Length: 195
Image 1 (cartoon, one colour):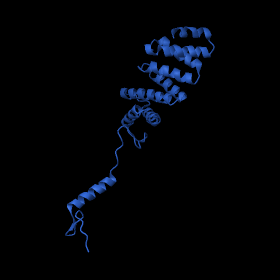
Image 2 (spheres, one colour):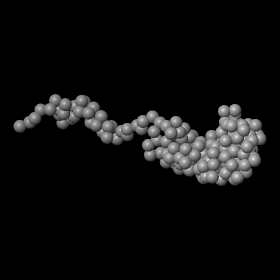
Image 3 (tube, helix red, strand yellow):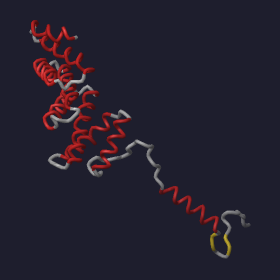
Image 4 (cartoon, helix red, strand yellow):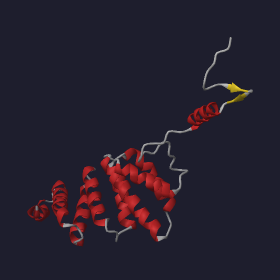
């Protein structure tokens, strides 16, 4: 007794065209990988990807605020670009170093954030983000209660006159608190009067 299946019909010992089509689709589906959602980095290994790929993936993770996941990418980019004098590499390094500090600060890893911002300021003192990096350095140090360092950086920021108007209040507050915590009452009065 033979069962007749219309799609798996054999004709003269050969499989029909529709059967071949289904086999191809079945095999292809077995080997196809599901594409990751846009902006996701599935299984990305920062140590083997091209630097440009790392940078694109890092930017995507930053946009999604996936801080823990982006840090290995940022660190790998910095390692690869260290010592490079190429202008584009320096811009990428500047962006990456600044973003690493921001991520570390948002994750409340103030010690590492302070180190990243200090490195950024030392290597890129003329960068347009340097004044804000100095402010974030002072804030990180305040969270660590390193008041003499907070006072130094806040005073340097005010003296540089590079701090944006919208950040003046924060810088004066940091300086006043740092001086107050060091029991430098008289010195704390001037920045407090600016608040």
